[in-house]
Length: 92
Length: 131
Image 1: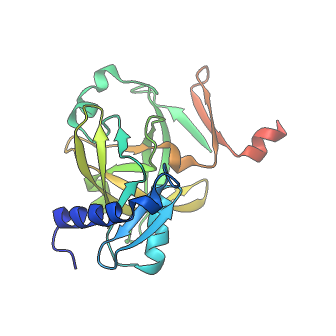
Image 2: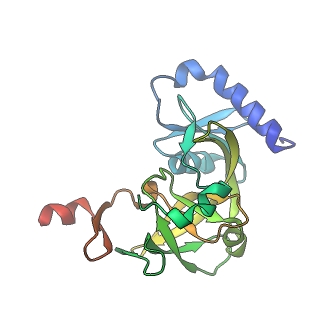
C-alpha cells in the first residue's frame, strides 16, 4: 500500500516511464490509469473511461491518471484568480 | 435538455443532479465552460455533502506553466434522466461555490447556443439530423 500522495505520484511516473514505449505515440491523447501496487495500467479514451476500466479490476484503489503523451492543461478553474476575475467574466 | 444564461451574472449554466456514496441526490446549477475539457469540477464542500469517494489523482498544468496535483472523486451525474459516472475534480479553492461542467460531461450530445433567446440546447446527433 502506498503511504502518501507524493509517493504514489512518484511510483506512478516511474511505471509510466517504464511503459512509455508501448504507450506513446500510439495512444497519445488517451488517458492511462495506473494502479501502483500491481503496476497495472488501464487505457481509456477519456479520464472517466480509464478509471472505470481500472475500477472493474481494482474497485477500492486510488489511481494515478495521466494523459498519454503530455499533461492536461487547464485555463485556471482551480486557481484563486479564476474566481476573483469574475467581475470580467468570460462567456466561452 | 436545456441550459440557460443566468439572469444575475449572465453566464451559461445548466441544472445537474449529483450523487456520491450517500443516497441523497443534490441538484445544483453548473457553469457550462467549453474551455474545460474534463467532465465536472466541484467545490470541496459539495463533494463532502454528497459523500463522494476519492478515486484518482492527476497532475494538471496551468496557463502560467505551473503544474499541480488535482484530486478526482467518483460522482454520479444525472443528466436528462440518465445516470453517468464521472471523475469530478475537486476545486481546491475556498472561495469556490459553484460547479463547473466541462465538455466531456455532455458527450455525445451536441450543444446549440441561442444567444438571442439566452438558451443552450443539448441535442443528440439523431435529433439534429431529423431537423
